[in-house]
Image (cartoon, rainbow, N blue to C red; front, side, top):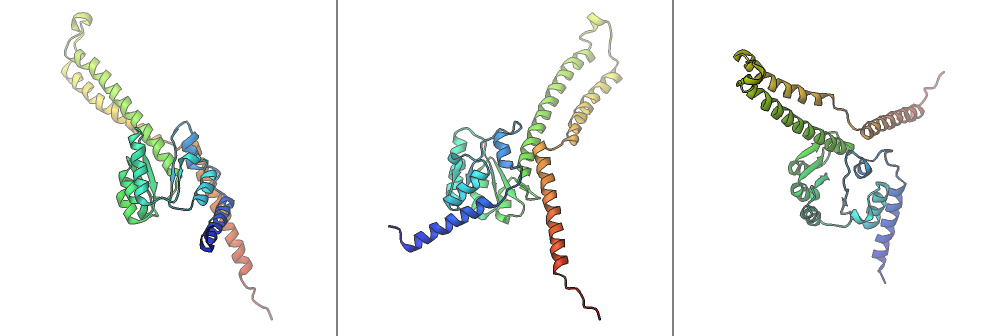
Length: 245
């Protein structure tokens, strides 16, 4: 039979889980997007030191599979779980904001710290979410993949361009075409190779976040506006009306 103290702790945890369950989450959740979005089909884990009931309640709202939820774990266990996933051949990105997340942030392939977190977590991480918005995790994954695709495209383009233009400038095709490229034009063609790669890279300036990220930003702005409006109404109602003679 559990003692009174243990029963009280369980009752408090159950109450807290009910409170957490009733807290409305944003209409677009970055973790469910990472699980189901085509742009980032990743497996999401939640590793926390909080109570199991609370962790399961939050995971249910975030659409995280129960098998991917670890609760009541120590900082060393978080780092150990990161290592287990890495041994399975996975690339692990860890998001955290506390001192107890620092070992896992340092162990992960990519450590992501929340800007509003502790200095130790920020120091141990590879990148920082300056605005402390978890949706920026999805944006970071999406833009990193676009950058890698652009780098690969630049390599293919530069390789093909040089494989054609270098033999042409050297006169290798002269017996077939009877056309020789003057040295000044050969130098210009060499410069155009670098210019074309730079212009291709500048296309990234036109990057737009995924639709789910834009929807989340719009919803956050609407909630902020509604909150400001409610605060203004409450302030107006609370302001005493001066008496008139």
